[in-house]
Length: 111
Image 1 (cartoon, rainbow, N blue to C red):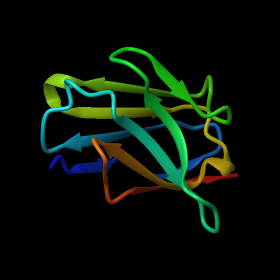
Image 2 (image 1 turned 90 degrees about the horizontal axis):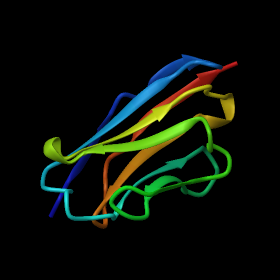
Image 3 (image 1 turned 90 degrees about the vertical axis):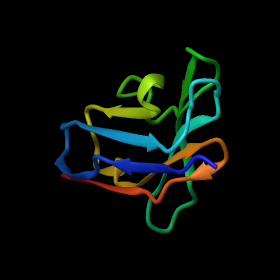
């Protein structure tokens, strides 16, 4: 079983950037089942970004043009580059790899 571990969260001002990393304990090279989700307080977990093929991606409307999902298969790592952050992006961000959730990393955007 591949266990993902997220890092890179923190506190940032509105308009700033963060880069989240998700290191998987096994190979991710052969799968498209790689995604980032987030859950804000009192809200359901929602899909933020995912791979739909080896190179194609899909994003939630709320983050299109601001967030970018990428991967380094050689390092079994998935990234989420988040730019132009808004207070409404505040949430715990989770990596989802091959059906396994990471523990989450907190992102807080101050206004």
